[in-house]
Image (cartoon, rainbow, N blue to C red; front, side, top):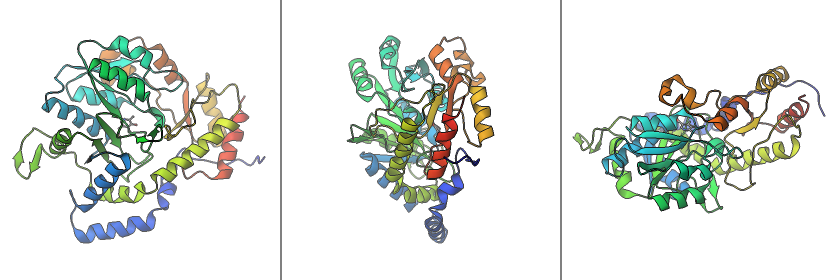
Length: 373
Ligand SMILES: *Cc1c(COP(=O)(O)O)cnc(C)c1O
């Protein structure tokens, strides 16, 4: 065991993207020469490839993950499948974007506690929150682990509600080794924010679905409500997947499966080698339903633990420090009693888990966590 102090950043994006330097330079040169900066061949190729990788008929690139969620909901409103004011069920501990998208679409978010073990929507609670106004559920596959697919499907079918999943942290996650995130429900929203498992070099997002009519409406809505230049069918927005980001993403998509395998192997090491009763490790059933976007541990005295990590040179982040219902931005939820959500937000710490970590760094992280007192 080495005792030399290392300094390991939580996430070293330049190092991660270094693998692609040559490919990026060559696609950029081609992009520059071609001169098609918006809605060009790279967007089309990426959309096709991403749809194929998810096992769906349609992928529509958009500007970012928040827009992906919002545009799906607005498209359902245009199609008459959702109405302003309808209730949408969301896990209370999701990233705020999920909740904001529902607000932006004119719908009503209903926050439900997560399951303590998986951090995902607690399906045992779900049915209690379904009313005659509930028209959709948006499960988030938080930290890269799929939500309870079968239970959500069953409940949604029983109550005839739509399911749109926030797959922004779950690129490539597989359900029963057969279906991939993006093909599990009516429509899925992805973000390619640089830090995600499939990350661009700027903002980017996408929507996947098998619903042809929905796909058409979404494509219009993200492009000024227009499918044909200067003919506007809907009051849409400008949220298109950037051509250059699509070119970068197309290169990186080839490595997604390999990267996810690498992430799982690091997670396996952490789960078997970190043995410290003060550190609660995340639940994982060892299947490919988890792509470990984040490795999130829980500690009772977070301040102390974070100081210790800092002194030891191990980078960390907190996902997320304040629960959405306590954010000033959505004060209407501040009166809710969500003790599990609040406890999670007080205890979670994300430790480094990404494809740029080297074996001696993983060894060091394990050692540092095991030595925490
Ligand atoms: C990143 C993320 C989003 C938003 O994605 P952006 O591209 O930053 O808009 C939405 N939901 C979840 C769960 C995310 O992690």
